[in-house]
Image (cartoon, rainbow, N blue to C red; front, top):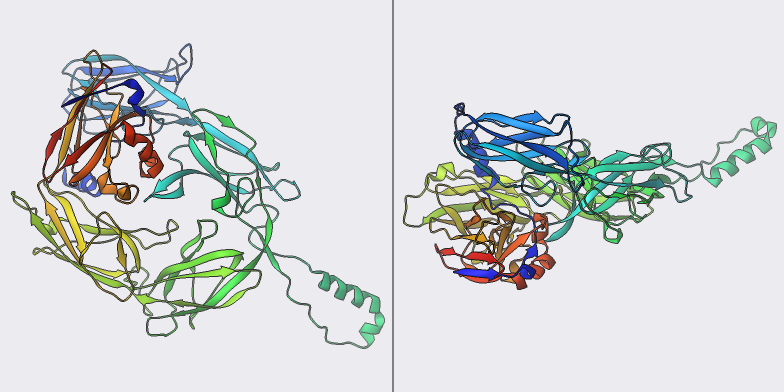
Length: 597
């Protein structure tokens, strides 16, 4: 069926292909022997220019990389003074080009979104000379401003991070930009400038700096009064020596983490949106000296004994950031631990523990995750209680018509979904036995996403924990409660194919398609029910394999960031322009489009 689409109905979006999971790609790379490339007489040549410049402005010394089916390894070359590049001696194949240079955003040829793959492949026939390929390189954007004390004085040597706002598993998160200098240090004026950034929405975070690092003890008025009295007493004090009464301990101060314009919590921070090549200044951050406290307590094993062998980290839940990764908090021989420099707010201790003498690279079967609140006073009675990890016993079965893959060549994995990035356990995985059984050991309590790479045309169809389906919803693990998991793989894989042509019947590879569940409850929580952004081939064709049966919406898009597809508000905007379709098990469906009438 061909569906005509008016230009007004085409929603802007960028392209990211539905791809084989990383585990499958890595396995393929390991198992594929190096191949030699026969010399050919084809070539690809062109020029790198500044995006949007008129007249065209070539960019010299940009690095252009060629990859593709016609060569065994990638090739690189620097553009000349006129921005030109050329790759000769190529055999027939499909090739991709990228261009990059410091202070610019890496460009994938044919992509409509700076810095984001994939681009458009160039099909090259035997002995064909492909000339005049133009790669527009986007100048990176910049964010600049000052880090200031509350008095307005500059903070010298402050650390400023510029982070992209995105959605991960349906939750708003901060991530490192995929291009540019995003971590900078302020100069003697308190100035900072992050550059080479891709367009997007950012938060600016500042920490540390000034004449000291860490915590600072200030002299109190009581200490000054005591000193003045001793001076006034003079010789009389010397003639009648007395044991001085020490003043109360002085408060400890530190420079708190601050977000632009000067707030402590990420939820209250202002975001800054920048376009390609934009220079945005005046992004000041007020950094405050705040009273900090110390948290201390006892680490206990599942049997209630002191734990010495542990690797624990700490996160600032109020700021939504990691304070120190696992290993920063240690315990003494009596299980006592202490961590200083904590500002008022909500905090989280997390990490693993083990019996004494367990080597650092050995099995740490216990896990603890403890929240606490810091005020102006030290917290001295924390109890970090470790529990034994849960065991997940499972089996993989196969439902289909073909020959099932060897279970021992599969890999079952679960990935934690923590509230703050990097505060959960590392991914846990296991290889099934020949009968399909597998065991995941020492799994901490929490929520997890289950994954298994496709194998020989078979994909993961269902995952059940008891009567609960856990592919569309996270698997919830409760401490002390073992889990039984049933996985089913199928070779009855769905597929959506089609072509997109313009009003003259020509391919339109500048567009992409995205397919997502029509059920809003899946938005942002069921990644297997969204295709990602699928780039059209040069002949206008597309292919979306492996979606589970269900009701879907298919949209033709251009110029949308792939990370936005986990944002329910973006899918809500796309939905009215989409085509509704239903997939049954193993169904192959074709949906063609024609732009305009």
